[in-house]
Image (cartoon, rainbow, N blue to C red; front, top):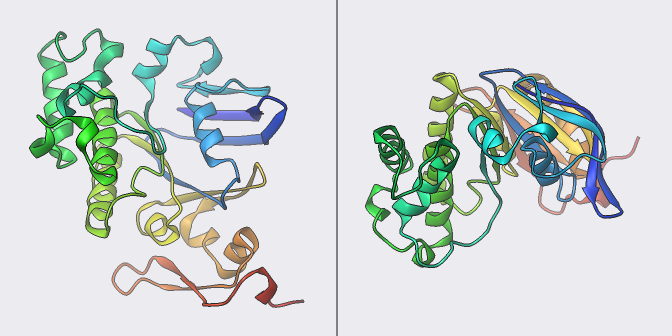
Length: 265
């Protein structure tokens, strides 16, 4: 479904990713983690075919991403970018409907399937009550839900999300990840860059950690989510315990534990 082979890329003369190799099979739910500046956003842009590789390649559904047109990529991959602001003059429904451009229709055209995809996305993201509002008037959290709705309207086969829930309150984060988990159970593939370690461990069976532009860890959550691994990745003292209901590993930060406080030896 999605593959990076010896991928290196960056911006201008600055190389951010160096020799990244990863494969994501159809139907996986994977969290992409790592410190600030580790390359998560850059990797998602490259995997989506939006940032050219300086070396190596990206394959989407067995095809070289660099050889796909924008319309072809949009039919294969749906993206939720980090941050951003709503363009003025569009309602939420119009903005969500733009996700259908690769299939030949925007908000004013298209077919019944486009209408159905738009309405389903609005319902699933709890945005139906916002549908007729101006997108530019929404709060940051509301707009993030609209961006997720647009991606779902575009297609649910492969979703790439860059901090798509960072501005949401706790209840809305759970709603969003419940929706992503359901999309996964229904056959969709999800790769989500997340800063919330515990949310990732609760929902994602596989975790990929980046550090300094390279894949530092990649494996099943219960195997890689350990105190020693997290300490090495984030350079701070972290304790890991079990979630009281699911048993999933959960990280606990220690006040005052910075890099200088790490145990030696």
